[in-house]
Amino acid sequence: MAPTAVYSAPTTDQKVTAPVKGAALAIGSPSTAEDGRYQSLVSNLEITRKVDRYMLDRLLDGVTTLSPASYTSVHITLSPSDYDALSSKLLELLSQILPSLEFLGTLHILNVPSSLSSLPSTLSLAGFAILSQSAEEGTIIAQKPAQPAKTGGALPLRRKIDPERKASKKALWTLSSPSTPPINAEDLLTAADRQRPIPTCEPVNSSAPRRKKACKNCTCGLAELEAQEASQGKVVILDGAEGGEAVEVAQGEKDRLIAAAKAAPKATSSCGNCYLGDAFRCSSCPYLGLPAFKPGEKVEIDFGMDDI
Image (tube, rainbow, N blue to C red):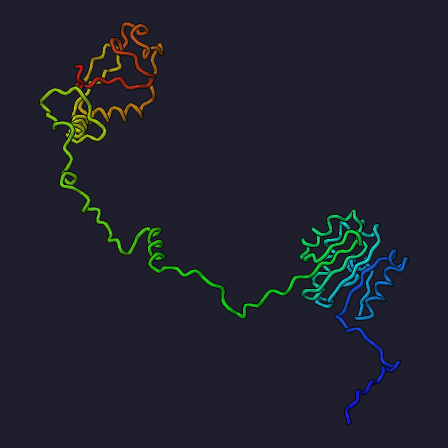
């Protein structure tokens, strides 16, 4: 006997259910709640998933905080006036929605007016990737990027450095290289450098006449000779009395007289003009015939002068 197919018709008690999707978030406003668009959006989403509902003002005021990675999709339905008021705070709202989405989660913005032309660029700035955009329906769908691939703990690659090149570069900027021997300063001197300098003038001859004074760095002995003559030479001091004569004394006597004159009371001229010169001196002035001098200056004539 050949087998026969058995067909059983479905009973009316069997129900066809849609597959359950991840949780969703519905964001609306009082205006879309009044015209029924917000309730219609929530009803359609609740068929296949769990839906959380929030008003826009609660998110912007910080009253509600969205949990990270909690939704597979976020849906926003607002009125044109709500979108115009949201334009200045749109980036702030998107920065809250992006962390609440799972990786590859989608953001659906409904009823977008044509005046909000900067919405796609704002979405890209917030970190979303735009999937589709319909100007006729006023809908934009964006997606959160996928999670970056893990490197598995591998270390980043590093450029291999040549040790010899590194050492040569380090030695280039080193003041004293270990491979360079130190320089002895004595080895740089030549035989001419080691010779004593030759005096610029011949040694002085005390018996020969001289018409110059010792220089500052005298090496010929003239400075020592002038110092010896100054200590041993004689000077002529004029007597200040009327009709007085010149008196020749030794250097030591001169010093004693100078010290005694400083200790004695200061003498003043009767006319007070003797220091000006012969034109102001009387016939008995002891300074007659001498050049003018400063007041209080001792008048001396040294026999060692070249002009005498």
